[in-house]
Length: 298
Image: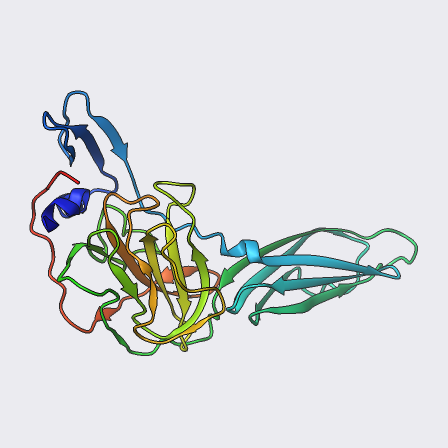
């Protein structure tokens, strides 16, 4: 029964050397939906990856306050985590107060900070400039501490369907050291490390608009972040800003987003300097890999 729930996850091991994989979905004579990496007459062709798209920058805003001919540029960070920002000013004309047209700073969680105050060189003449703000969650000055992660689920045993540097979808900077664990939908997912919940998604069904599916992102005390992806719709039981401990219930595993079958995608990330990247980690106990075969069914 468990093998039938693995679906396409087992295909990943046979295709790790490729940058992308074509999967064929078909219904056999018994009405069973199956997946294979071999062409089948009448099968639907699926070309899938698992990019992580969380739109964290949508909670970081640039505001310009105008007072008596002066402009003050503020950054408001609505996240429950610090963010590193980069403010660029281009097309600067008739402006005082711009010592450097690129400003980089770490803005604390849930704060509103003034970055720069501008005034006209020629009083009475309009200032001209175009601001552009970029932000990345996390403090790049923090150093990650050694930590072995307890298994972030209840039940099993389950197996690794795609590991670090997996060629199917673990080749990008954000997911290079991620691990995919094949498991039935509805498996309880728990926190592998304590921290603060900084972002959740709970309303996505099926593929949806977000490749990450439903997820929970947790900020740890050392500045690293644990991310639990592809959770079941409506199963997330934590809220943004909530402090959690190891073993706290987060939600249930699912098959949402750009997922090829029921599994948990778990990754640890940190801000390395205006870039969010995955970092190597280890589970506290061994997790076996799936055998090199492909199973269909659902």
